[in-house]
Image 1 (cartoon, helix red, strand yellow):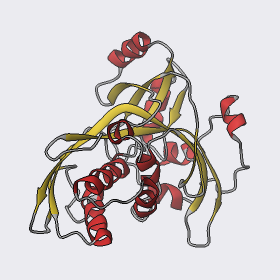
Image 2 (cartoon, rainbow, N blue to C red):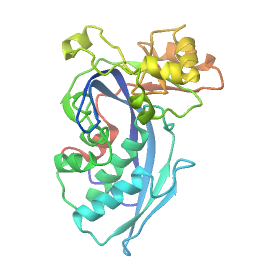
Image 3 (cartoon, rainbow, N blue to C red):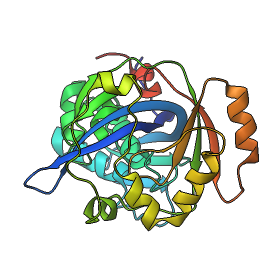
Image 4 (cartoon, helix red, strand yellow):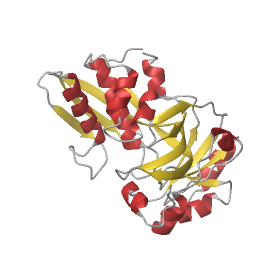
Length: 283
C-alpha cells in the first residue's frame, strides 16, 4: 500500500524481551544481543508536503526542540541524501513516553524516513533506508525493517524471529532514563557471555542494564517491585518502562486497573510485525 499525504502513519513501540551487553567497540558503542518485539501501542505522525524545502514540526514531546527531534532530523537527513527540493510539515501525536526504553524517538524517525521515501518519491530500498537510519540511532533500522528480530552488533544486525502470541502490561514510571548515563555507568556489566536464540526461547530473558537502572532510578525499582507481585517483571531496553507478559488479556487488563496512578499503565498485544510494515508492504 502506498501512503498518501495528510493521513496518520503508525510509529509503534517495541519491547526488548532480553538484553545482553557483550562487549564494547573502540568507538565506545556497546555490543549487544537483544530481541525486539513490536506491540500495538504507537505514536502517530501526519505529513503535509511543502514546496519551499522547509521542514516544520507540530506537536511532539514537551521539552524537545525542533532541531533535536529525531523526526525532524530524519526528514532533513533524507532530504539531504535524496536531493529533493520538497519540504514537509510533520505533525506528531505522541503516546510513547520519553526515556522509557520503548523506542519512541527511533520509531518516529523510522516512520518519517519510510513515509517521506514514498511521499518525496526518493525510491530508496528498505535496506538503503535502514542504513541511512542507523546514522540517527541503533534502534532505527529494526523499525524500518518492521519485523520482530534477534539483534546483535549495536542492534543493527537483525535476524527475524517468530514469537508466540502474548499480551503485555507496560508500566512507565514518572522518570526519564538517560541511555547515555546507563551505558556510561562504571557498574554496568560490559562483558556478559554471549547467548543464543535457542537460550532465549528456552527462557533466558536477562537484561544486563536492570541493576544499574534500578540503582539510579528508584521509581523504576518501585515499578518492578509492584508489577512483580503479579507476574515476572522485566525492564525493556535501558528503561525506565517495565513490562510483564500475560497469556490472557483479561488478566492483563485486571492488573492494569490496579496500577498506582503515578505510573502510566498500558496493555498491549504483541505483534508479529510492525503496523508500519503492514502499511507499506514489502518493497
